[in-house]
Image 1 (cartoon, rainbow, N blue to C red):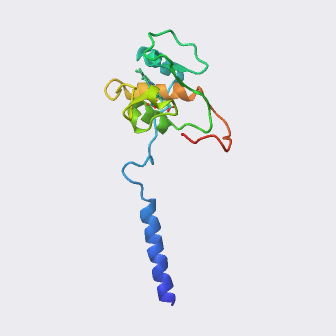
Image 2: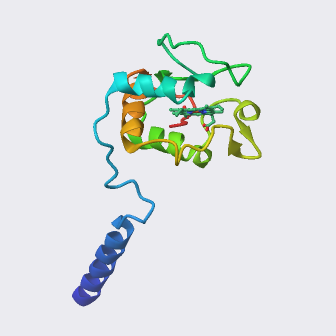
Image 3: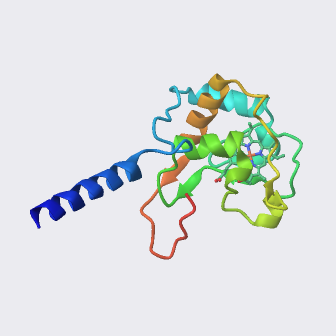
Length: 149
Ligand code: HEC
């Protein structure tokens, strides 16, 4: 009996160990270098992110708009937005389309945001994320609020 219990415990520990091993796509260990929000704002305009986006509470220079309705970034969100979420949104936008009307922001499941994988430096990415983080305001979620993030 004792032997069986010990065996079961060993099997359980092994299973837990395997379950806790991060997969290749886990975000464990992901960490952006610290960014500078002011430089991020400059990069946002230089890269013409403002041709599709407004940022809540920021007066950005006008850019020829590519959409009838700009996609607004920042503002009140139900929970803390992670750097990982923003990084993925910027360099792999079709991975998870944001909480916007789908017909406005995607075509056949693909985000209408351009591919920035070769047009951005890691420095610009860290600064853009710092800039955007400074303009999100997380608040306590109400029960009815959908969980996008
Ligand atoms: C041609 C228009 C266009 C340009 C230019 C553009 N985006 Fe986007 N962006 C979109 C659309 C459409 C979405 C919503 C669909 C999605 O989630 O990918 C989006 C979504 C995002 C999101 C996710 C928002 C959320 O709440 O999920 C972030 C962050 C973002 N963009 C940042 C940027 C940054 C930074 C730049 C410049 C480097 C940029 N975008 C340039 C169209 C654009």
